[in-house]
Image (cartoon, rainbow, N blue to C red; front, side):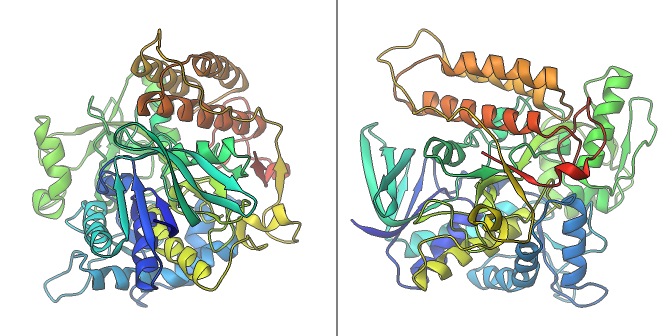
Length: 518
């Protein structure tokens, strides 16, 4: 089957695009290495930030909050598109059947989260927002897509004279097959599995980002890995996330001595740095979230209540052990405001993309919104005949246009193609753990030139190992590619900005208020 659009990935961004594409009459296929429902979207608890009421709020205020958290690197036009189109996309999702929390009079409940100046975040089931959005979109895609390829692992982009023509993939029988399409949309999510402690599912291995790097497609802002401050300190993977909605409703952060030490409603980077510093100072592996003062906890936050009670904790009486966990990659494949990449007919949206919306740090609950806004924008651009990027958004400096955030290209060792060997001397799961430990120690919340260089040497050695062409080995190679690119960008950014903190460069430098492009 020749597809008009191949969507690689099954989170909110890709599925939003697939639903819109089918509605416009395009032959759309969705390729996912797991079941459609097994994406990072499913685990998203925070909600969707959108100005659904004009009472004490406005899109200008939402824009200002986003720019503030982005620490000087947001593209204003991209943020404007996000906040202006967001409310309509939420309404469309409700029309698809998504059920959000409402009060006794039927009005949507709005919560305030860290970094937001007012309450504008809608939730489903208290903290099951991602699962509800995923359910509604999966149902719609299964009803409308021309092809749903579950259990297919995308290996690399297929590139011809016209640009991207699809992907090479391992099918469920582990045969290499080309899946061709006029347009290809990467919506493969982030790379949280670079780190030992993450809120991301095991599938978040940077596959789309690595494919782009191997094909020479420009990426940026990947030094900005956001760490969520309040992940439950427990061996589960992904780490159960204790949503910012808890702090928005009055939960308190306490150190090992029981003392408050930071403003609970500060942005994620501020809270994560404060927590890491206090943990190092006190020599402990976790701190505490005190939610004992919240009323009707189980009714308001049933998903969180189930998670913490499953490990033997009572949120109404116990302080909850917490530690920062890798959560969201703010950068990715550079796109224009319609999601077009530097490679014709290759598009990107969601966490794998760098639209310029998040800058150096993502505002809480803007991630689901980004997927809901920019996924459909891709389809609208394809529908009007677009195939190449325009000088808008984060793409502006790459195409030589004036204005916006500047870009500096980095010399970087190109990610090598995946090379297979008949047999392996090493266990890819063990190598993955080695990589995750190295990244957590050397490129986590706090970084330095020495720690970054030492980590790169470890990743280089892991990348030289060879194994058979299986998803486990391919994910390992993808993590090495993404990790080394992140390390290169983090080493070049000799300052602390947003989600990137250098212990050897604690201040912010005006001279580095630009993107590093690989």
